[in-house]
Length: 154
Image 1: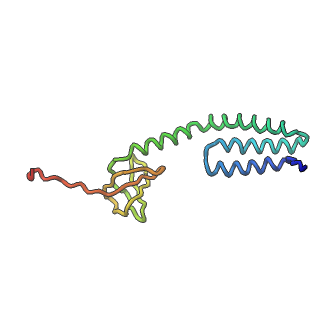
Image 2 (image 1 turned 45 degrees about the vertical axis):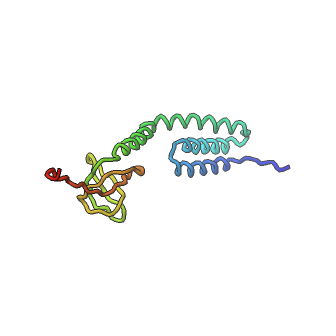
């Protein structure tokens, strides 16, 4: 029977995996796991007689504490991200004038002094476009023409 012995560098390798996952997801949860893995690995290196149960307690406790610390300090950023997503959906249906032309599918408009990326069919600057959807912080637009109805034809 083969027995697996945990060494300090296993915790450091686990922290490396967690930092890669955090870089992909950007949630804050895996950042807490990353630092907890580093704390556990360093503690185990300094105190090599720690048993596996003690290592797990250190990892779980530090993960729990760090998770709430990260949530406390970054709550504004997380809620701001949610507000940004809500504000982009409010732009659907709005008519905007292109500040920069749409070339190769991408252009730019200015809304309340803020530059917004737009994507759609190539158009000249100054063209009026309508927002039909959002993709993160990029607005999907299309060019439309409004026909003026001659009132004398009625």
